[in-house]
Image (tube, rainbow, N blue to C red):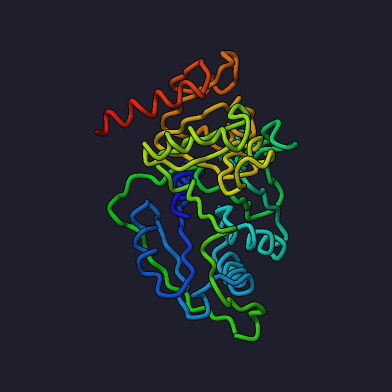
Length: 311
């Protein structure tokens, strides 16, 4: 949500509108302050015990109430598990469209509508979608596509709404939170440095030099879809259209050709280093630095140099 205040500011300025943050939960003062510090003009808050944990029924009802009352032209929702759950429910209630899993946002100059960009046809091309006839325009946007803007002096007007959902209207109950999936927790979206391996690593054992470099750098290990589909590493590590969208300070791609599906997930990185033995690999088109060579020779040498520097 905080990341989406960055493109939200751009869209609001282009349309002469206001940027409004929505905060729903229980005991949410810190989140309200954060939204204000990230540039929201206004923050609308629903703070009640029944919103402590996310439930589809409660949150969709709260959002429907706010949209009906305030009439926004556009609604940006994070494409998180909760956002992907709530967005479609809300759009159906409002009888409007939803563009899912967007990786780009802009204003169509001819119509003034939001131009939602998302991967289509298996990620082989990027489609731009308009919603000309219904309001609000709703889209879910991948985490990591946009970065939080620099904090500003809080200026947002805070509006607190009294809205409650009766217990009998909430059909699900959260019994337990399990923090680890499949025994492995991989925080790709929060990583500052990612070292990723692709088809070029050749097999599960090929990730050994990738992991060694990651350990030397204090980085997180990522992977392309090809490596995951081959069973060489778990899906939790996957970067790309069907994996995680990331924007680290440093992204090192090892043996990754650079298919559009993968580029959609990492092209927002501050610095991209590509290591590939094919000099014509598409990954070099987006890389800031490229090394043409065998990754099994390059990575150990690189790891050794980094260890020397750290020592």
